[in-house]
Image (cartoon, rainbow, N blue to C red):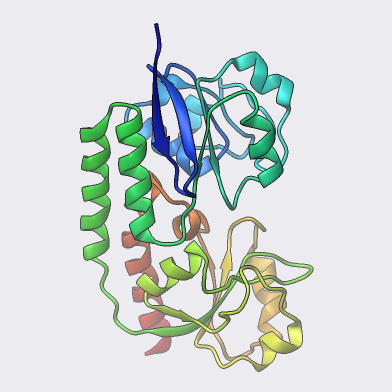
Amino acid sequence: MPNTVSTVDMIGRNVKINQPIERIVCLVPSITELLFEIGLGHLVVGVTVFCIHPDKAIKSLPKVGGTKKVRMQAIEDLRPDLIICNQEENTLEMVQALEEQFPVWVSSISNLKECYRLILELGHIHGVTQSALNLQQAIQKAFAEIKIRHRYRCLYLIWRNPYMSIGKDTFIHHMLSLAGFDHVIDNNRYPEISSETIKDLAIDVLLLSSEPYPFKDKHIAELQTLLPNIPILLVDGELFSWYGSRLLHSPAYFNDLQRQLHLIKR
């Protein structure tokens, strides 16, 4: 007979889960990758179309929809013991519909400390505590090795038509700060920003994210007309916005950005 345990998720909801957990549907791309990293990939039976890491393992898994809209019947057919969601990436309506039939554990991430909590709690829930602890400590060690040569005033764009940036209460804003960037927009979560505003900002560098909008070299040329004397860099959005095991790679990338800007600015 399964043993039912209660746990509190990251938004304070009490979630009752039958143990042992044998079938997980994950609707959060960065957490899907995390589950594989800490040794739980064999339990994952369904993911979103945006779950792309680890690429070889993900290809064969059923896709149940996107992060904002899922196919309920596809999830029902998978008979999950647990569904993992995120407060920002998934919708309240989705969570409410899913929890009528299945246990739904919701994460909420805005800073590195909460990432550590996410890793350790998922490890505890699924019985891989040591593996989760090892990963958390490895990420913590990597972030301790960030070398900030200079702090740069920046604007980080995530969308085009209209241009959209990020606010101070987002995970990306926190990562930028750790990487040595002071973001000049600090209101709202994902504010729209006009070309005129971009032109008037006092910034040292403009950063164009690879996701969710896939900025390319041609967009650098487009924006350089607004900021003719400001460096514009394409950056890996996953390393600024994915929480979980991808954070292992973020500090080295941030150090490379610092070196690159040091060469440009000197």
